[in-house]
Image (tube, rainbow, N blue to C red; front, side, top):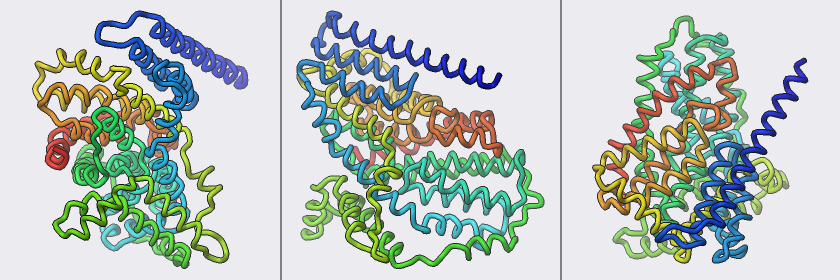
Length: 497
C-alpha cells in the first residue's frame, strides 16, 4: 500500500514537472515569435521571455537543469550566441571565485577548528553560568563560524554538536528549550550567510546584478562594513524574541555537567597540518578584506600595494590558497585533497545556477538588447510617486517574503534586477545600498522548507517542527526587514554612497 502511495506521489511530481516544463517552453516560444513593444528590440523580447520562463522553472522545479536550459536558450538569441554565453557564465570571474572558495573553505571545514571554536563558546565559564548565556554563546559560535563557511556545510557541521548538547543537558524532543536551540541554529546559519560574501552565494549574486546593471562594483570590505553591524543588531533582537516571547523553561538544565569538559578534551590538539591550513585561511581572508580598506590610505606604498592586490579580483586569493595547500604537505600528503574538494566541497547546483544568472544579467544589460532601458522606463511611472523610505521598504519586503517561501538564490537574482533600475530611475535612493540590503535579506529566509534544505531538515528533526519555524521565521522576517531598512540602509548608503 505504501509503495503504491509513493508511486502515485512520484507520478504526480513527474507530471507537475512535465506540465511546468511545457509552460516554460511555451513562454519562450511566444516571446521569440511575438512582436516586441515600443522601446524594446526583438532580441530584448527574446531575453525577457527566457528570463520569465527560467524564473518560473526555478520556482516550480528547482535550480538544476533549468539553469542549463537558460544557458542553451540564450545561445539562440541572434545578437548573443554560444561564445557570449560561455564567456559570461563559466568564464566569469564570479563563477571562478565561488568554485575556488567552495574548494578552499572545504579544506578548512575538515580540520578540528570548527568544532574547537563551537565548543570553546559553549564550554566556557561564561556560557555555563546560566541557560541564557549558554544559548547566547551557542548562537554566537554559529554566527562567527558562519561568517566564512557555506551555510549548508555549517548547519551539518554544527548539528552533531547540538545533538551532543541535547544529550548532556537531558533534553528530549518536545522540550521548548531544545526547540529554541534548533530554531536558533537555523536562523543564525542563514543570518551569517548574509553578513559576508565569503563562501556565500547570495550576497555575491546581488552584487553581481548591480555590477551588470551599472558597471560599478561593491567591494567585499564595503559590504561587510554594512552587513556585519546590521547582522549583530538582528542577532540581538533575535535573542530578545527568544528570551521574552518564546521563553522556554530552563529548569533542571545541568550546565555544570562534567560531560562538557569531556567534550572539550576529546578534541585532539591541532597538528602542524591543521595549523598551516588555519594560517593560509587567515592569509586568504586578509587578501579579500584588506585591499578595499587600505588601498586608499595616505601612505603611498601601502596604497599602491593593496591597489595592485585588489586588481587581481576576488577569485585570486582562494586560488592562491588552494595552490599553497596543495604544495604544503603533512605526513607526505597535501593539505587539500583536490578530488574531495571538487566532489564534496563544491555546491555544483548552486554555482551552475550562478553561471546562468551571470550570463542572464550580462544579456539583460547588453547594449544591443536594450532591456535595461526598457525596464527602467517601465518602472519609472510606478516608483515616481513613492518616497525613498517607501521604495526601500517595498524591495526589502519583497526580498523578505520571497526568501522565506522560495529559493534564496532566486531572490538574490530577481529582486535586485528590478530594484537597481528602480533606484537609478528614482534618483532618491542609492542603487548600491539597496543592493546590499537585498543581498543580506535574501540570505536570511528561514520560515518555510523551500527557502533552504536545512530548514526542511530542522523542521522534520523532531527537536522542533515546521509550524514553529514558520511562526518565528516570519516574525524574524519582519525584524530583519525593519532593521535592514532603518539601520542597515543608512549604514550602506554612508559607506557606498
